[in-house]
Length: 184
Image (tube, rainbow, N blue to C red; front, top):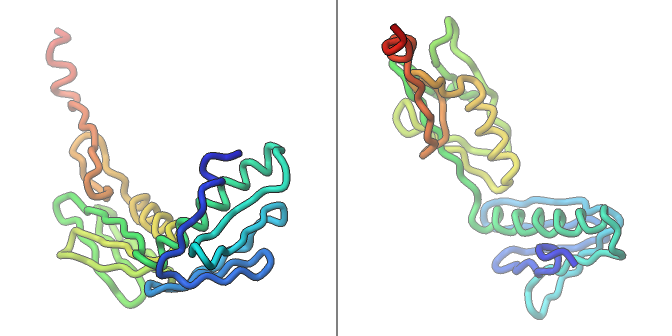
């Protein structure tokens, strides 16, 4: 059996309802739902307060879906109870981020500002002009929005200017002047 798939998902404080192939998870941070593949069965063990994921056979696709479904359910329970957070840093002279309505407006060295619409499933908070905190219950939505913001201006390798995840190490390359200095 799948090592991940056979572990039950502890529900904790979340309220879970299983209706055939549709699972709804509700908690203090929000509600999420998942339509499970028809091959996979999910049962709620109310005595132990945990979700048990099972598969019908040992086919390759069944094994893959087994672990995937269990991981998605665990992420949903974690998201509605604690939530997910990604932090981004804007680095560079004159680079900044600001909120305008439902958009995140970035000034990152282009002639015009770049406006990124914020989806309804995530919340964005700014700390100063160069720290962006993306939070939400859906792990995939938080990660995808953070990646879209980072993609606007990835950190460049010579000065390190751009948008990076908090704590991300950018490998800085030596410039032309230093690289060719010993080649005479």
